Image 1 (cartoon, one colour):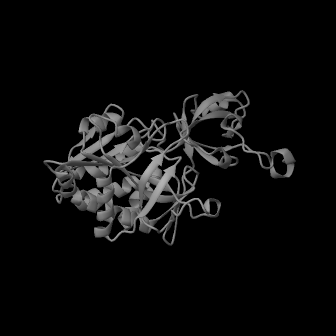
Image 2 (cartoon, rainbow, N blue to C red; image 1 turned 60 degrees about the horizontal axis):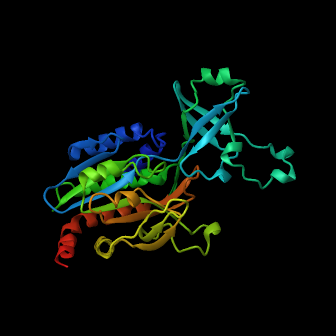
Length: 357
């Protein structure tokens, strides 16, 4: 357990927004290299395959996190940004940001009205990203340049880590905790598979969702299991929405649909649903069932490759997704690892029965 938590913490402490996953990839290489040859495609997706023969199952979790890109550096030293991924603007005012510059990390804070002087019209206003500015302590654009910052540099939320009881409070649990869970699965299942099993650490999921495509096309697995967060709905703001709670176990997505201009989602085949349900039963892991609108993973596009790749999404509940601090349950992650292990072990038999039908 200590090793597992340390791995999650190590990954969450890395500043790796979409398109800048190299530092996370370095840790994944370190953790996976003992199990075999690691392959990297032209976009930076990493994969490793263990076991031999048929059938072939693949598990994927993305390496990147949501972030920001410098759009303009003002003459007054304040910086304008674009969003990189799904950033909720309502949480930005007064938040600390880290910008990855040529000379290292630069800390800044999003500007906001001073409380004492906030007019009534601004008290409950959420500013769009185009009306948000970053203060890095510079008095003019030349001072920003001297800090090593330029247009096009990337930023992320400030790093945060705290464990209280069963709960982890941290940035980018989406999806560093998923990556750590796949690593734990590899550790347990290596040398025990009766089929081929691939693990994939994907890039740019928060940006385009499609960057996984080259590696999945090349691997061409018989099934793809996407490991990612699923929004918990047990906080007061979400009361009545659904019944996804921290401590309730991993989440089986029976239906996911983005519905925000991206007509994409996953409807898993019955036989894969049954495999996950049976694996959860064998593992002794509780399984929450969900229909989710507003969520999309990189499995939504990978499933259409080649002759079609049966795909299923397994989530772990997270509160406050894409916010500066997210919250998840340690026990849920342990159950998730148990579930992934049993899924890998049981896949060959399940797939063989599918072929008979």
